[in-house]
Length: 74
Image 1 (cartoon, rainbow, N blue to C red):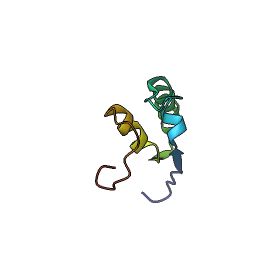
Image 2 (cartoon, rainbow, N blue to C red):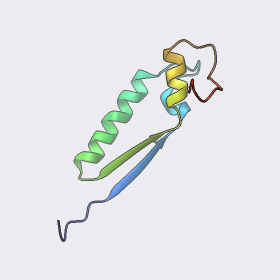
Image 3 (cartoon, rainbow, N blue to C red):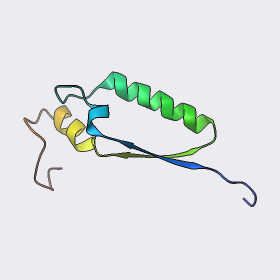
Image 4 (cartoon, helix red, strand yellow):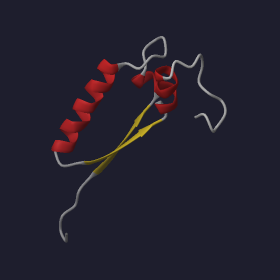
């Protein structure tokens, strides 16, 4: 649309934001993050969420003893 400008915000979320001290997924923090991002989006912003913590969360969810090093497993 001509004349309408939407602002975009990129949010980078790291492993320490998504996981607890033991490396397990921190549902409470993720819930708070989602609520905050939804609030910002409701103000009319475009949001892009980028996560470097996805591998750590997935490894914890799969009960792997450590983060995978092999690209195929990541």
